[in-house]
Image (cartoon, rainbow, N blue to C red; front, side, top):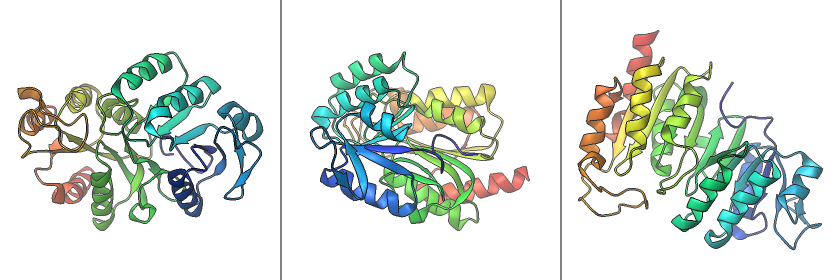
Length: 292
């Protein structure tokens, strides 16, 4: 098992023929991801990367039975693309696009809440189940198959943590980059729940950052229901108050938003907190040895 994506996922690419879509789709195909086609309005009927192009998501689903979508559509149109995918019946929507206006995401969040779909992102690196499916922009070679689940707000730290896990002699079941925007589809807690319920995931790494309540919410849930060891890291320990750091959602708005405050909550909830990003893998290895 893994979570969200596997070798049976049938993936369509929205924004397929654009430069970003083309580059990353070809990388995903090279990795072995089962991409069945793509969508670019007005280009239906063409072939791109030896795959069919459709005008709409519905057309693509009808012909290919796609169940997963990855979005490389420019920010002004990306919210519509998410809603189109949700409306057409796509079960997993991964939105890579950065810079979607927050007001657009307010509309998206409301629109998809009654739909039978999971949204990852926006402004995220995507999801990878090593050796099976890479639905995102992450460097696939860093990830090796194993039983550590990884959820992160940061793209780069996802790759860093995965590399450390592999170097410590373990591997990744699935890695989920949830994105760093203020309004996202899948929260840290949602991802943690998926991993806690996945029989193949034996340990979990949770990477958060300053701003928002996602890590605190996840930590409280772990304290109450957690059954697996969790290592946590919070980025932004040196960030000044009131300044957005890299991600739109990474801003210290109050005393509970600081890295120190979040680390304290994580520790209180029984999560092993790594003070430095360099020790995430070794701390996880230590916990797994204690468990076995």
